[in-house]
Length: 84
Image 1 (cartoon, rainbow, N blue to C red):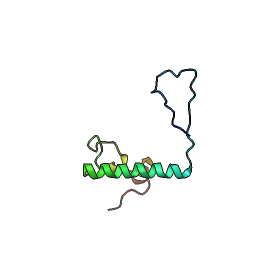
Image 2 (tube, rainbow, N blue to C red):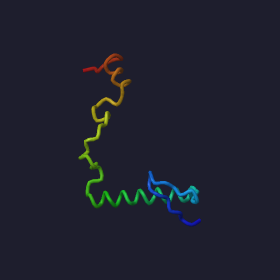
Image 3 (cartoon, helix red, strand yellow):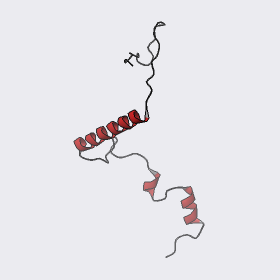
C-alpha cells in the first residue's frame, strides 16, 4: 500500500482526497515497539544517565514519599501501627 500524505492537524483536507489507514499486524507492532525501545536505549547511552528525566527527575511520584497509597497509610496509622 503506498504512503499517502496527510496534512498537519488543523489543515483542511481537499474533498478529492481520502484518509488512508495502515493496518498494523502483530509482527509490525512488535517491530515498531522494538525500534522505539532501541532508540530510547540509544538516547540513554548518549545522555549517560538512563534514569534522568527532562525536568531533572523532579516528577511527582507518591512511592518516593515512603507510603505507596492511602490503604497502606491507614494500615500503619490505624491497623496495628508500627511496633518498636
